[in-house]
Every structure is written in structure tokens, then in C-alpha cells.
Image (cartoon, rainbow, N blue to C red):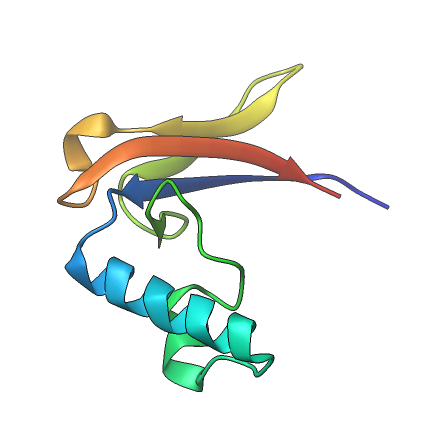
Length: 93
């Protein structure tokens, strides 16, 4: 199995995030699945306490980095989407 590296932006939780999280929590407490709108808002994953995950791959702020012995991603911080306050790098297998 191969490893993939991801880069996402994070926006701080806002009022809509809090509302969606409340619906998520209520559905979990009731033992039912959240509505599609809530699932889509959280990218079909559990809500991230850090905030709203913003996909950065495919945007102008991310570009592939390669040299003879390394490969990865470069982030042009001047072109990050508005309201992104953090950048998360993670590996997944």
C-alpha cells in the first residue's frame, strides 16, 4: 500500500460550522445518520474541531515540488484562499 501526502487549508469554525456541528451531534445522540447536507459540509468525515477543511490541491497556491531526491508540495502563502488561517500537511496510507 502506498502513502499519499495531502495539503489542506483550515478556516476557523464559524456560525454555520457550529450549526452543522449541532445537527451532527444531535443525530449521533439520536442514533441516526446526519442529513446529506451536513455530511457534505464535513466532507463525509467527523467534524474537525480545528474548523472548516478547505481543499487546496488544484488551486494556484499549491504546486508540486521535485528535485533529484525529494518530492512534495510548495504552498504560496500569498495566494491562500481568504480566511484560511492554517495549513495542514498529512500522510495517509
